[in-house]
Length: 275
Image 1 (tube, one colour):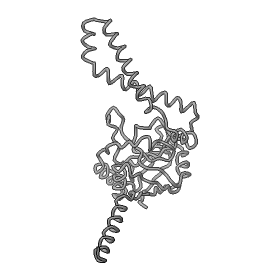
Image 2 (cartoon, rainbow, N blue to C red):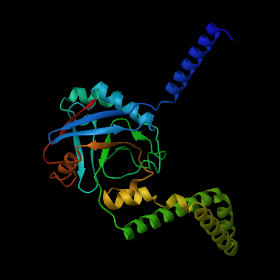
Image 3 (spheres, rainbow, N blue to C red):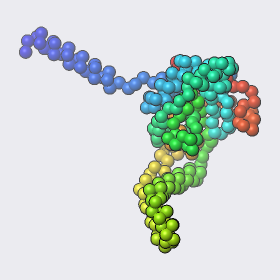
Image 4 (tube, one colour):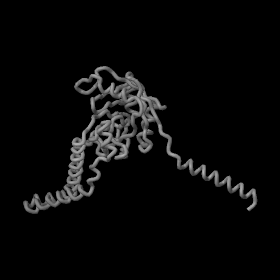
């Protein structure tokens, strides 16, 4: 092979290597600053929840968080804000409420992201009107939570298993609804009782096969024992970031005096900027 061809081949190989490394490079993380009257919190947004990350960044750029309130604060639980209706300018509030009248599809990256203290998560409407658990387009909360001991975490796991079992049983009952109705109308109590026992047995077997889903990981147990959080919210709300600096600001806000509706008695306005 002549020198020219060898040089061209080496350059091509080098370029291919560079392009491969660029393609393999991890996505750059985005940080934002939440500026409050109590100080600033620096928050890292997760790249594996891109719908929530990009929606949040869009709202920031749009000014949706310029001067809104932390309108709900519950000590040892969370602080919540981002409702456009809490803007000082009522006309601007109506404009933003209309502009952000949509939901964001849920992104549950569980158990990687869970409700330890300091995580940023999306608020949402209740399951009754929002069965897919889709998120609010602007409202979010930051977890404060509380510390759990071993027995407390064991109880959480038991409750999670019972919830899993109940959801499976409800599904099986729904799938057999017509058969249950037929047996009930015919007055065949013995077969109706046998069917119900059979469904319970099926539900228990399926729940046992999925029992791992009800268990907390070692990382979760360690975090909930040492940092604290709200484990009962895991898998129910999308977690899409976490506070990396300014946790003391979070603690100050959660201790503010509130009324019976959990609204701070003194306004806590904030502004978010992309770093």
